[in-house]
Image (cartoon, helix red, strand yellow):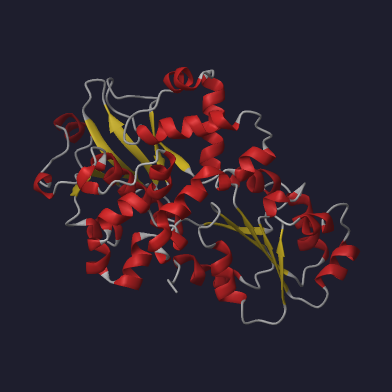
Length: 375
């Protein structure tokens, strides 16, 4: 089994007296990680809130009723907890009234779980995010040489655990996930009456990775107003399907101020959304895919390491651009991504160098990805 980066961190917080909340898209391995931690213990109660009878347990719940359900178990794991109504208040009831229980909760939709737990569980929870397999996790399992060889494959099929472990049916698995499963909670919880629109927006975004996104333009494509488009993009982001990268501006008058790009957490999902599993050699979008992969992987490892950094891209009205910026209180680092290793000598635009003279700059190609993702 591939060892996940989150496993050791989670173990550190067991028995802390606070709820442990893990958020991430469906099928990224949240339950598998918890099984690896608690699977051999006898005093664990597993509940899946996708099941109606489990959700019923929490309707009009009292501490007395929940104690009867939990019995002598000391650890209670609730999967897909976003399906429970008023979930934050229910979790607060458990942490306050049954303090000897270690509560562990997973959720596939951050908007639902976070919004309904933040206030009730203030000071009572540890919160973590989980993503598809990272480059570093796969390197630990397969070795650096093998994983670098697999890079073209990862750009096409992504890194969902089941997709990686079952290559014979990877296209079928990705089609199943992208068809509706990943945004199942958006449709049910948000009561979206025209789900075909959100799918159409996702398809439009899939064709625009690496490019600046206009809500007005997307609205014209999907016959929606720009505010609805922004709402749908926010929901897709909070469901861990996509993420937005804003533009950085500080010193120059001609820097773009309010632009953004949208990327996918997993390229297998992106390619399934547009129905394109052609190999890298036959594609025209490989540069954008490589950029998406590198940025998503870097943000994933930064979040696992809980680094206090922000992420941006940089561009001017004259179309001078830096693909990716990583900014902390101490320094800024800039990165350019080139699928062709022969372009590794690229330097930052002169206007960027003049405005930010002390910034480290690295061009990342398939030859040196380990410097960016393992360094």
